[in-house]
Length: 383
Image (cartoon, rainbow, N blue to C red; front, side):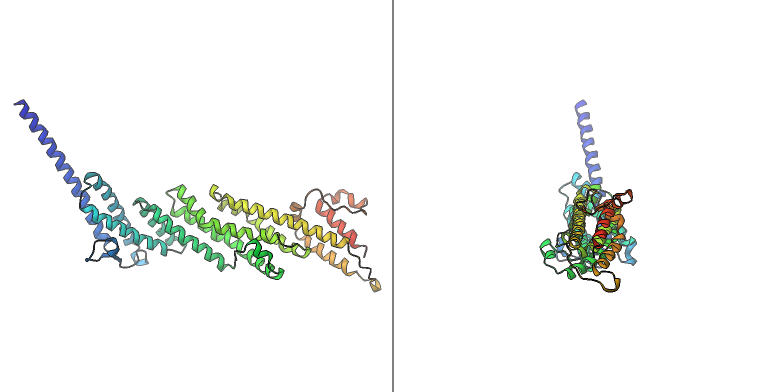
């Protein structure tokens, strides 16, 4: 009798467990069917096949009239994935899983296309991209989402730089250019770099931070992989120009480039603050060093050309010698860059005039720049 009671109790427990499992499976299967009904409002199946390729998209999820319905679609996909996970645990042999897996894959393919079509950076587009990224990531398709997003956004950056007029030229290509062509491309670069830093790269950083806000690692990886190559190319150009043949007349454009980069540094530091984008700041540091070296070399060349001038022509009626006029105009233009030059010219000047007198060694000429300008002025008085 006792044995019978134990057996009855055991059978009752198994029956309850079986009933509970069947009820859970039923709930999961119902959730899958409900999600399928919502998803089919946007994606219609071909009755001839059950493969994921047999589904076709009826229209865009994110048109203005469908925005609220798009949220329902995302919710249905999330529900579908959650139900699948639970059903796999409860009954991996369920026939519903095959249909659900096919539907989830098709939904992800559709979201991938929506992801690729989002090229605007307005508030609604940013919200849509984030919704897509969150849905695909939570459904186990984060890698696919990231790959598509990266590919599309990277091409947008490259195209935007091209529209700004920037040409990605190697050092060899730059050195083969005539100065007029180099000057033109450099002036285009000056206009492009400001917009690239303050709008293009800055906007991409904001977008990546927003779309992948749920993962710091993906945020960083996304921004770095999208912008790194373009940023390195952009900031290598002026460094390559600085390595070309140097003449005194090129100093003013070189100083314009140097000043532009220095002015943009606070925003550059902000935008490329990730460890993975530190190579951009290293590239910029190298470019600034090249520009500084070029400026010093041009001033040396200017001083040397004036010092070696052998013209003995006499100016009638006490006029001003052409060389003196040239030197004074050159110095007047340099004065506009006095703050920048003060940071570039080393404390110890390599140029020392044998004619230096007490007036030029006074405290008023204590800066390297002032000393060098004074030296050039004294030389120009010979003519």
